[in-house]
Image (cartoon, rainbow, N blue to C red; front, side):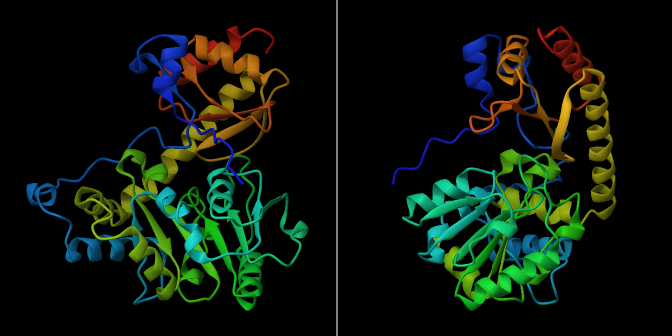
Length: 336
């Protein structure tokens, strides 16, 4: 079966070609990435000059392990973005797959490409019970649904008894660490957790993610990724930023404030917010397609959905000027 074409956020250059203006003139609110990037640490020229060595990898993974709250002696696997792992989910084997959805479309695309039968389940209660693999994004993208860790632990145990695996994507979990399954995944059978670095820290261009699972499963992905899969500068940045507890605390607070400010704008414009996370809001509008076009003509890019034409996902404006620009464009949009 051929996988369908998948739409994502981003695509700023394509939008500028279609609607005009230089990409730098646009306000990109189409992604769930923190618009205020973390300050980059000072990186030695040697890190740029050499292939990343084992010590640098160990330092980054140890910092990540502490940040994720893994038990002593457990470390994650660093990868060049969690998407690189999603592309290789066929390593888990063949079997029926259920994806809690709607959600990030690349999971279905990856499993279909590997020949696995895939269904999309709207809730945990509607799983058939004969799946070998279940995918849960927690919090979910785009609607922000969350799942209780105890529910997921029970599901993972059930899947492990069938030689299966629960895949938990925690790309947006940095702001709700109490939901994380990372520590459980490092010691329990039948669970694999993916963590993103770029979204919370605003450094998506670094292409860095982490995999948490028991060692045999990590080794399968390590072998598939090959040597030097993650750049030295990415590892050095993670080692520094994950260890900066004060910055992490401040970043959480700043993001929550940006989300509240976005909510004020959307409320003032009469838009119905139906979900989201602290890094984006999901709104419903009966003329969402027209609203998307209107915003594009004003060089503001948001995320639309082919499977839910009444939805738009709107990321965080980074400052007062960006919020004012969004509010003005929404106010002037016909039919809002």
